[in-house]
Image 1: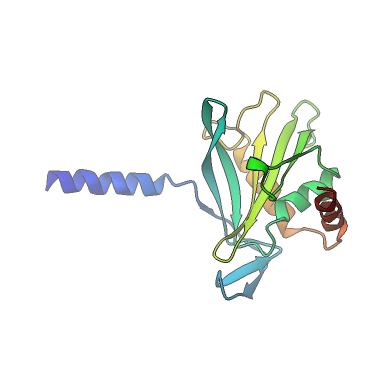
Image 2 (image 1 turned 135 degrees about the vertical axis):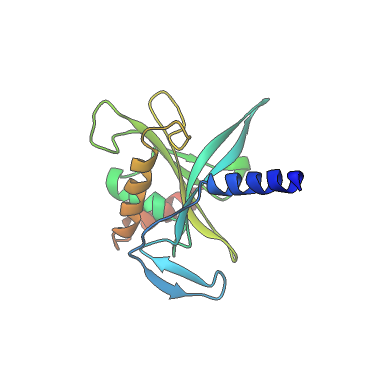
Amino acid sequence: MKKISILLFLVIALTSCSSSQLASNNGRKIKQKTPSYIYKNGFKNTEIRPILTINGIDSVYINELRFHRVSNAFYTQKVMYDTFGHWDKEVRPNNEKHTILVWEKRQLFGNKNELYSVAADGIEITTVMYASVLVFDAQNKDCFSEQSKVKDSLIRYFSNGIKNISTDRKFYTAYRNMMKKR
């Protein structure tokens, strides 16, 4: 009985500490076959997911903010493009076709002393659709870690950006042109 009580306590403690957060959504819900619905100019919820990265013999977990059930996996990339223009770098993990766009040393909150580097990404496959970002401060610290003081502000920043995303096609044209050059 004591073992069951301890196990139950651990399960409750672990699930209550989850990084997944429900977020208010102003987007329009659109029916789909798989996933069953998505949100236009919105998302179902957010989640901070630790991602294992390997560089040579070193490995480290970095935290990725994901916006689930978006209607377009490019939402975070478009938010950054609409605000800051063309990206600084393109990263292709393992030479995949998939491209992560990086903006370096940007003022996300208007404070000239606070610069952030943002890697925007997204996944769009039959069963999963999300837009995501990784954010690092000027000291290269993960801004979605538990110790981060700007984590909640960043979630609001990108949530508002997605909800108010523009309908212009400039980002998609720039992205398509980049892909043609490869």
